[in-house]
Length: 218
Image 1 (tube, rainbow, N blue to C red):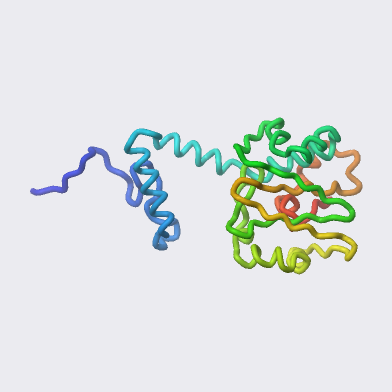
Image 2 (image 1 turned 180 degrees about the vertical axis):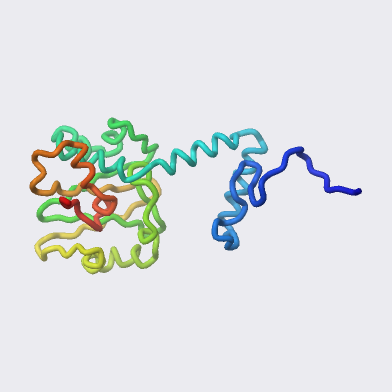
């Protein structure tokens, strides 16, 4: 009987590309233009031998392993080590690398919350975000509503997150870019003097490092 001819002698699971990644979106929705482009470029790189499927999978696993716990460790170190805090505020990129977190070539800036100043992070153009320290950005961070309202009416946005700041506190909004990212150094909660660095890190939330929340004791 006639049969289809293929250039390879192995079978890929339905819906998977040669590099083992899905051709279709997880929810069976049509792929966007950029998703199709990503698949095409990825498969071309594999076909030309520039990368292997295993290398792609390893990089994806490394990216997925990033979480707010990395940033929380940095914040806790700054709370307990004044010299490190000074280095973090002077050069957050180098201070993060000092703790073993590779943030790549990005210029990272740490902004400190004080009794008189509260910092809020946004990316008005897209969703630039310090992923190496905070993991994947939350969905709301990428929405057009947050990206525009955080600049126009930051206090209203913060109230919707449950953070109602006193009038004397100045809210500073920092706009991330493709090559410059921000992380908030939140104020250390009162009543934590006897806590270990690990216990302090457990108090630091993702939102507190974006500025839409603050660390609190349980």
